[in-house]
Amino acid sequence: MAADLSEKLQNYYVIRMKDPKEDPEVVLEEMKVDGLIPTTARPYNMIFVRPTSKKPFMQHYEDMLELGIKPEQSSLRLLLKKDLPKEDLNALRMTQKLQNGGSKVPTDFQERLSELCGLRTVNHDCDQALKLFMQARSEIKLHHRSYNTMIEGLRNEPEKAEDVYQMMIADGVKPTTSTFAKLIRIWHQNRLTDIDKWVYEPQKQNVEIDTVSLATVLDAYVRNNQRGRALQLLVSMLSTQAQSNNQNVYNIIMKFGPFDFAVGILACLISEGLPVSASAKSTLTNLARDPLSQQFVDYLNDAQWDARSILLSDAIMITLPDLHPSLVDCMKLLMREIKLGAEATEKRLAMLQAQVALVSES
Image 1 (cartoon, rainbow, N blue to C red):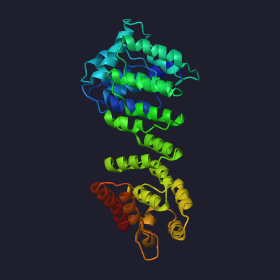
Image 2: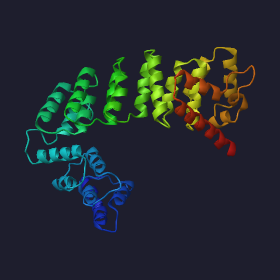
Image 3: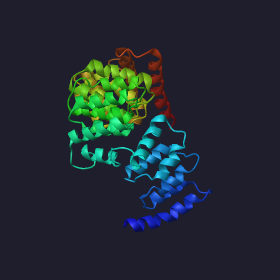
Image 4: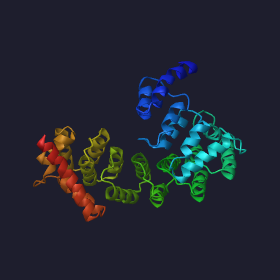
């Protein structure tokens, strides 16, 4: 669709947004559903002019930048009047200063940085990107987005990426979940063995690490045969999170074995209402090397590896004479091995029993 035609079509929605009876955020979503992607800052300005918004104002601003829309001076003035975190206000003032020509840093700094870092094009010039980044850093207060971009650009140079992270901390800019996700990915891709520092560093900065990154760290532990570190991470995860909501975390740590340990991990996975994946099935089948373990796998096959059928199977859920320990007992053995606290252990066992009750009632 031609840009001028798209803009004319969007005018209908912008006019609606001006109506005090309309919710501009709802109208914006309607516009997107109708296949019209914003091409100017006007729809967002209609949101910024309101005293409150359902979605954080800065998230709308970030969405606008992701679409390649250059903020207008009016956009910046409206946002600077909001009660926003100091870091966000500094970033907005930086953009305002660039647009007013008050700095030698190019007005399209973030876009050029992304291009030089190879995030939007096939071109990748780290030296030029770092030079541009350092120039901007010396003149203006950078947003966390700029540090994250530079870190990702240095994906083949982990030491320099860590240097940029240290600059971020020194400059008083709070790292984000995305910051650590990028650093973990860099360490994993470069096969560095000290990847766990990016698990504990977020705790120091009071930043939550996402489960995809946890799975990446665990994969590195499996590759480097670092079972002890994996167990420490498992303890941390089970102690601090009610649910991981990512079966990949369990699928990967299950690979450490032995079989009883893997069954305990299976119990944790099922306790969260997660399905049993093909990966979990493959791991448990490969780890079953004695008659009792193989018999337990036969029971799992009978249940077709379906979580609901597993929970309803007495052969799996109850420890009977001359049979392999039950799913519940394997969970208890796992908790004992990793020295999980009593409170966290009881919580996990209760979650498993809740799943049993749920399928029994249905």
